[in-house]
Image 1 (cartoon, rainbow, N blue to C red):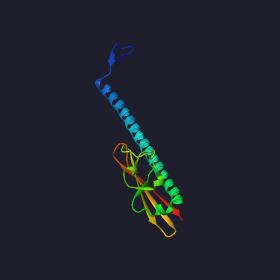
Image 2 (image 1 turned 60 degrees about the horizontal axis):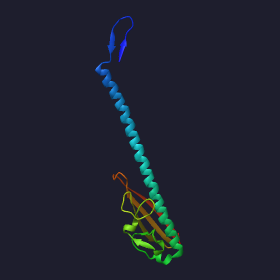
Image 3 (image 1 turned 180 degrees about the horizontal axis):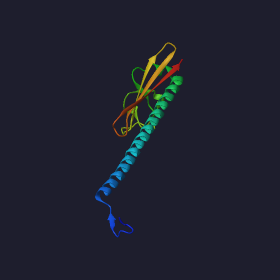
Image 4 (image 1 turned 180 degrees about the vertical axis):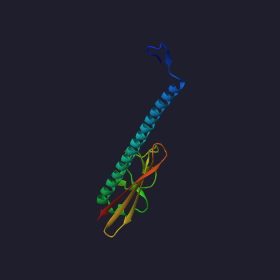
Length: 155
């Protein structure tokens, strides 16, 4: 860019230092925008995964609640970790296996993000307490997160 200075008859152009400073400022602004949008996207993805994990856990707890009413003797006889099969919940809890690794809709899967369901039962005098742990690795494969719910069934 050339500027004609009035009255002097001289032209002046931008120096290399001015151009480098302008490029540095633009680079800093673009870099900051990229970092901010990347963090926002990661936070949105993490919230979506946690929401899906909560939905899967609530579904499992609802199935336990239903089984406690329809087949309590069989449900309370289960020992060790289990999950309720979404394919046929009437068949009752399934030992921890591929059926306990589900996607956000509760369908068995081997594709990430997959939610690993583990339910354990702790007997009490007045009822049964079930602790559900839902564990998953985030979409980036960096962090293993988990969600824990406790539900008590009364006789």
